Structures are given as C-alpha cells and as structure tokens.
Length: 72
Image (cartoon, rainbow, N blue to C red; front, top):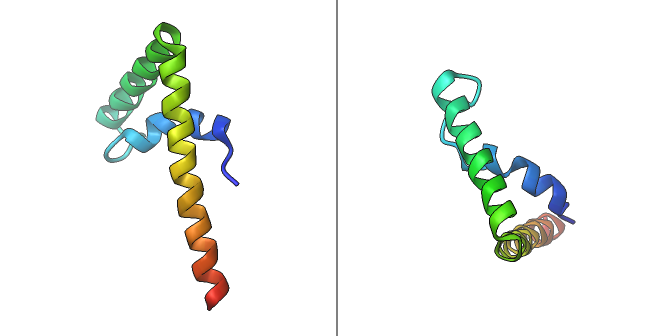
C-alpha cells in the first residue's frame, strides 16, 4: 500500500537528478519543492488529480513486485 502523503513529501527528491546534498542538487530540489507548492496552491484540483494518478501507478508497481516475489 502506497501512502499518498509520503509520496507528495518525497516527490521533489524523486524528480531531482543526482545528489541533493550538493549545491546543484539542493537548488534543484528546492526549485521542484517550490513549483509543486505553487501548483498545489494555484490549482489544487489538478495537483490532487496528478497525485492520485501517481499513487495509482506506484500501487500497480508494488502489486506487480509482490506477485513476482510470491511466485519465487
């Protein structure tokens, strides 16, 4: 089961390429965090729709992984 709140919290880090502890990665992380908060504030319906779609995809991946592990 995928926790939607945790996905929203971790999303900026997932969108970043590279190490977020270095300056360039940290700047990208903060930029994504700001953009996501702005999207959430300006268009909450769209943000929620995208979040639900993302959680659905992650649940499908989780379910497929569980099926593969059960077959072994």
